[in-house]
Length: 195
Image (tube, rainbow, N blue to C red; front, top):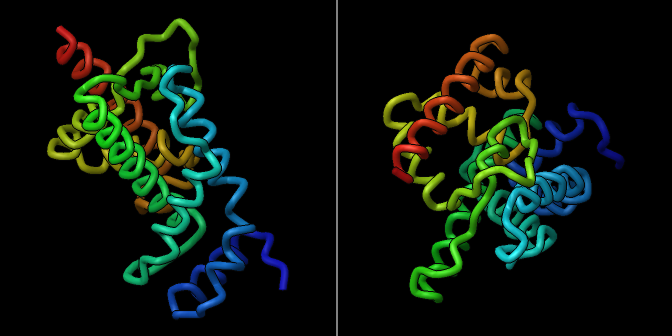
């Protein structure tokens, strides 16, 4: 059976949720390219000397984390990628922390701050530590939890404004407003951290 449309992805996610043991095998080829694109986008915004994990390996780790979680009530393709954004963030931060611990604080994984601007990178952009960004997002989450989730979905999964709005049950206009506010807050917070 071929699964090609968003509705097909939603259907196979329901099969996964319902305990179909072969659903994960059918899902991977469908979502692999998008997950790999997310990983490439995230790793593209890192400094060249910090690329210690390959996108393909990262995709498999993210997918396995998602497919093995039977507690998730999958709702749609957008919901799957929203959860994938959280898994991507968690795995990236965990990998960075392990690497820092192994090097006793050296070799911090960095990404360009301009990556917060719709996934666009600027080679002259200031680099930020991924763990510092994660801590800033956690702080933002205590102030504005929806903004934290929006940044997570847009930055780590590359979801569109419409997809984020669908997952959160808000209007696209609300997502755009929160996205702008969150980016401004993060830029100011990260600038204060450096000072």
